[in-house]
Length: 250
Image 1 (cartoon, one colour):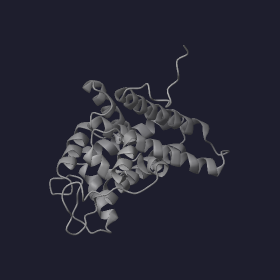
Image 2 (cartoon, helix red, strand yellow):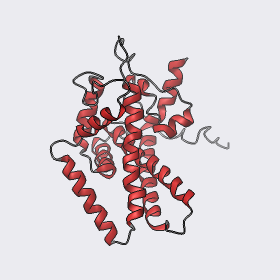
Image 3 (cartoon, helix red, strand yellow):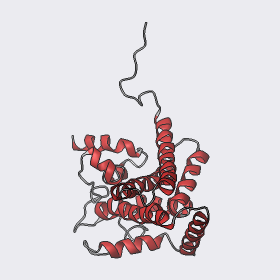
Image 4 (cartoon, helix red, strand yellow):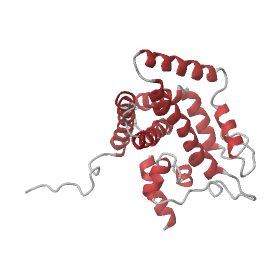
C-alpha cells in the first residue's frame, strides 16, 4: 500500500519541532540576508534593490525579536536551556539587549497590562506616539545598558569596517533596519493594541487586535497585531495566532 503524503507540509511536525524550525529559519534568513547585503550591494546596484533590501532586512530583524519573544514564553522548545539559548542569542543580535531584563519586563506586562506595574505602559494621551515610544525605549536602556548598546554597536561597526564592509551598507542594512524594527514592534505590539479607552472593561477586553488579513498581519509584525489573542493565549506560538483570531470571530 502506498502511503499518502500529509495534506499540509508541516503536518508531520510536532508543535515544538515546528516552533524550533521557524526560530532556526528566521535566524538563518537574517544571517544570510545580512551577509548578502553587506557583500553584494555596491554603487552599481539599482536603487530599487537597495530600498527593497532595507524592507526585507527590517522584516527579518523584527523576526529576531519575535524569536526572543517566543523564547520568553517558552514556545520554542520544551528544553529550557535550548529555549533560553535562542532568547539570549537573538536578543543580543537584535540590539545587544539583555534577555533576562526583556523576559522579566514582558512577564510583568502580561501579568499587569496597562497598569503602573506594566513596564511597557505609559500614561500618555491617545495621540502621543513619539513620547510613549521614547519612554518605552528608555525602559530597556537603564542601568548602563545604553552604554553597552552604544559602545558595543560602535565597536562592531568599526570592526566590520576594518573587515572591508562599506559604512553605507552597515548603516542601510543594519542600523536603519534596527531602528525601523523597533518602531514596527512598538506600533503593532504596544501602541495600537494597548492604547487605553475610557471606561476600559475587564482584563482582555481592553487589549485590542488589529483587524488585518492573515498575509498583511504577517507582513505587519508576524501576527503581533492579533494582540488580544496573544494575551489570552500567551503560550500559543506566533504562527498559530491567525487561527485563534479566526476562532474568536466565529
